[in-house]
Image (tube, rainbow, N blue to C red; front, side, top):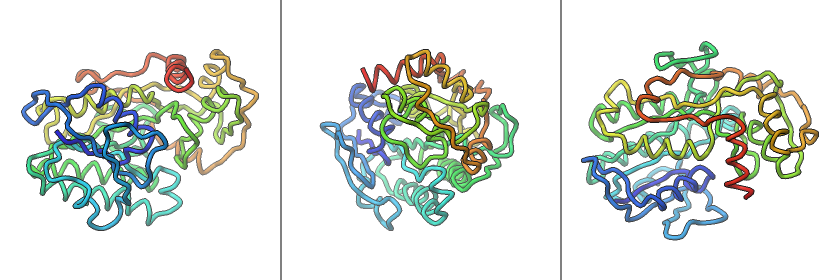
Length: 320
């Protein structure tokens, strides 16, 4: 079995690769477990610490015809993680559309030409919601209020339509804000949610651009990776047409609660400076503060135990 991961050089892609290598198998179209013969990582940059045994392909997924070159004809599983993140997509409309929308369509088109129907896992986002109640459920409509959210929603519809037409076995999961992301801050509007924990835990300064009572729907990297694999391996009957999008379980935490957890973990809260950014607060504030995820829960997806458990996981996985 050949597995293609777009955005595989990013922190989440690298964690997914490590998990797949440790696991060694994935579900085939007939739901039997098949050994992974090759993992192909497609990204615009290469990781600092490449995983041994992985085929890395440096490519701009927004370039015309790129997937014809990098996705082999016998690929059977696709994890589409690559994206221009929220604040960057809002700042550069053309870049966001080219990478988040056009490249998704191009990848789906490539899948039409593969030897067998591939399982296609698409990483969407809570940014799909905009005009919504603070707590959404499985039936809450999506009405995004920023370019990134719009692009993700269109991607969800494309995956569903290509699945309905029998071109892919599509599965979309809406990811909560991932906390704590390792590495340096990125251009995501929600980047502060990791920074205000990650940097002080390492004795570095962090900037918080939002108010302390802002609530965020979060999920740890370890939990997200487990859910991506589960989304792939669930039997096809769990992804019927019209229900190919799933809200993942998570935790609702306020910024103040994050900082309290930081202090309990021994982090220096005085390293956080408060520099309000109305644009960031507007983007993140338009996302749901929580979700009722009955469908995901019934399928075996789970949330992290607490914000303290999320912090401990970062300490163990990244600083241990």
